[in-house]
Figure 1 (cartoon, one colour):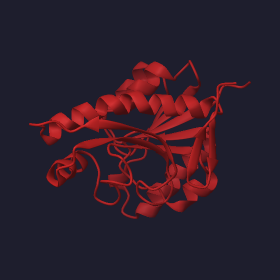
Figure 2 (cartoon, one colour):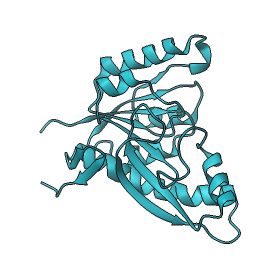
Figure 3 (tube, one colour):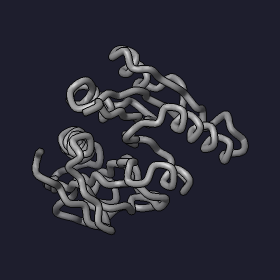
Length: 208
């Protein structure tokens, strides 16, 4: 069986990327590219330290944002990865990406979809909303992405407790630990051909 390839899209420090480098790269598949929408983010340093090729398509440099997405899609077409992982990538990709890579784009969200998700719910804003609402649990969702924010079929979810005295920053760090657990496992399952998508239902198949 040929080794499957992964492209990772990033926007920031890349802690989730690091979990993929540590737990997936060279073990279950190969990360062939890390692509950033901004220069000088630490995620690019992480990739370079692991000898993984990097690309930058600077979103801020494009007046016409459609040209940004066109360039990004061109790069992905050239690399032809088996899987694309949105690891803290802060853009919603247009529909052409999902037509070209159907059920091959995975996203991670720091809450239990369909709660605290969608437009405006990203980063620390998610955890602020959880605390403001008085929720007793939050969590992490890994899902196949589509052209709507935090909407595609759910692969994995895990609860994280909300504790007395939590601040958004404290809660964010606790949730991040679970992100680091769930994302590489979901990617592993994909690379092992153990995910079966039926409409909105994703089944995890037994290991072959």
